[in-house]
Amino acid sequence: MNRLRLVLILFVGMMLLTGCNKWSEPEFIIEDWDDTDIKPNQFWTIKDVIEKHINGNSPDTLITTTKIRYIRAVVVSSDEGGNCYKYMVVQDSTGAVAIQLDLTGIYTRYPVGQKIVLVCNGLQPNSPSLMIGDYHNLPQIGWMYQGGVGRINSLFIDHYIIRDGMPSLKNIPKPLTNNEINFDGDSDLNKLVCLEGVKFEPEAIGKQLAFNDFTTDWKIKVPLANGTTKDVTVRTSNYAKFRSMIIQNKEYNLTGIFTKYNNSYQLVIRIKEDIVASTNSEEIVEFDFAQNPIGEGKWSNHSQLGSNTLWAFRSSSMMHYGHELASYQIAMDDWLISPIIEYNDLENGYMRFNHQLNVTIPNYDAYQVYYTTSTAETFNIADWKSLGALSSFPATSGWSNIFHLKNINANKFRIAFRYNAPNPDVTVYQWKITKVEFRNK
Image (cartoon, rainbow, N blue to C red; front, side):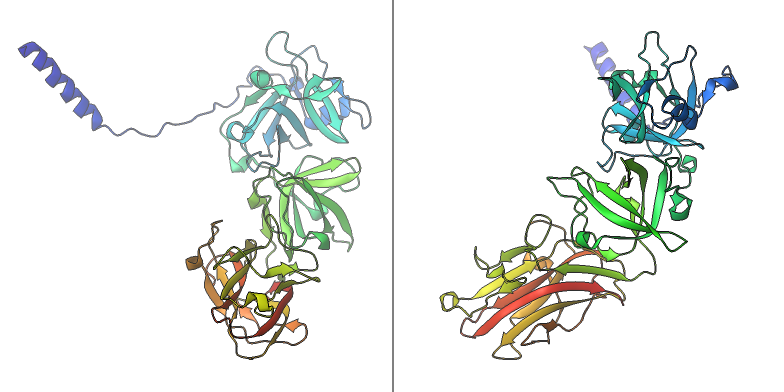
């Protein structure tokens, strides 16, 4: 019994001692690729492979070589944002190419800035040869699938791709800007670019980058030094994590992968941080109610006192009927709520809206404007604050007074038009709102 007690005491003592040790975080190391035994003639460039095996217009072809050939490149794409699905883009000093991979979460294994070595004919015996080709004029590499380029099976990726050292932002090539991009050829396809000072087409303003049910193709015009512009399509997947971002009427700097579909140049944005407002530009966000703005990712309405709200889309405006209708002589608290708005210049920014509001008592205060910085989907009246007092009551359509944004302490916010009328005996008329805009100039 004493021996058992001694063993227990020793065991507890050892546990206490080891419990005092502080475990350090594990160190993750990716060894640099050892190319000591590799001869110079065993290296290819991306340009070599594209020219040898596509030649501008040849069909997809196998990369045929009796000896192992290597390409050294850097990862410039990322599927973290959900917009690059099952492919990875790598770039060297001569060009760039997409590698088709039957793998998701690629960014966790091959993040942006990861140097890689592409083994063109596999490291293992009997490994299938890689195929080089193009998808509607966009160069890509992968396995053969039904006679064309398909995805490399996830179990065999290590046969073709070697990680060369730890990833680093220093490895990333400088993005090509507007006047550095070759818009008259294909030499810059798949490369990392930054399109500066671009604006989206008018049809995109106030819309989402993409919607839950479908991918979008919004056009932008890229200004060049000679005074001309080039059309580029911003293609955003309905699975992109930043798809709900509202397109504003302002200039952007957009970073991404420069691609092509047939004869149309495209930009694939990787993550939300690739979208940056151009500095010192006029910043305008507009919402035009010429069409019904209510819908997913758009405007919404809410009644604080019941299930019904008298906000409705009528005759190219959002309209609240107030107590004009005899059947609605009840207390009301109805909200018309915007989607999340991103606005950077809060110091100089202001909001105004075009509306029509006939009231029998000019100082009647049922018409109110609120804001919130909360992104919660559930409505909570405690999250909302007054943006200022409405002092403009035009009998015909006209602009409201200005509501400054200085007191909003976040660049993401929502605004709401509130009809707050606890007294049903006051007779008022329709409140029509046709347009809302945020400006800094």
